[in-house]
Image 1 (cartoon, rainbow, N blue to C red):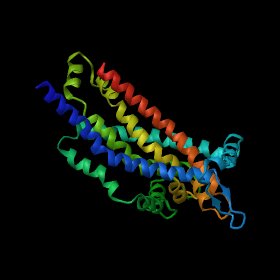
Image 2 (image 1 turned 30 degrees about the horizontal axis):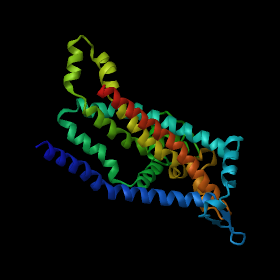
Image 3 (image 1 turned 45 degrees about the vertical axis):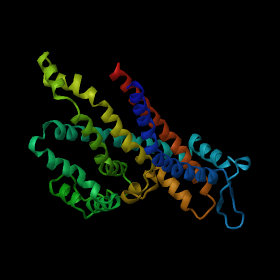
Image 4 (image 1 turned 60 degrees about the vertical axis):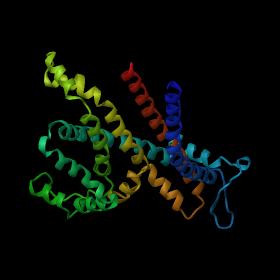
Length: 306
């Protein structure tokens, strides 16, 4: 019997990796191959006639000059460096606003919605049914000089005259990022709050904790991983976003790193190598955030098991 059980355990241990292998191979192949192509463009040369980037597939002939140009621009106070700092600021402020706005929404739906929970969940999923660009275009119409927002603010007396919100204002781009990515933050946080056992909260109340203290000492710590997961989920695409500043501003003073990558890649001059190098630099920066998230999850898992 022990041998039989051991055989069954062995079969299960080999079964699941075998089932996961095709998906893992697919993901690795279609991540590493494009990544190597981008790296080859960044380390390549420029065609002297057509001024187009020529990827260098042989690592022996790689030329890191594009990386030197990018790092020089970032760390010597150039326009690229200012944009990098601005992008970090935009993402930090937008993520903070998503936490402030999204946490009460996720908490209410998960813990207080009652019989309205299903309807509110449906409304939370509704933005995913509409293309992001279409939602941004609707936001453009809303913020136009003759849009509904200016009409409302002028009517109630908050503005003496209509304001051109789309004329390169930082707050417009930040609010656009919040509007676009807030649903992605709410869903994982809702899942974390919904998993909290009600018996734990009742035990805290039985021990004399007020509702506010029970929230601070129990609910908030137990939802920390949901906050972190939602924050990572929205910050990663925010760093590469370029269409939100394009649609809601179009001004160089609100340009983000994604706009520079788009400019380099689509430029008629020989800047494709710099665009590829900037893409890799941004990927490495974002990877640091992902590593921090994975380390935090691993530490929380160890604490839970201990």
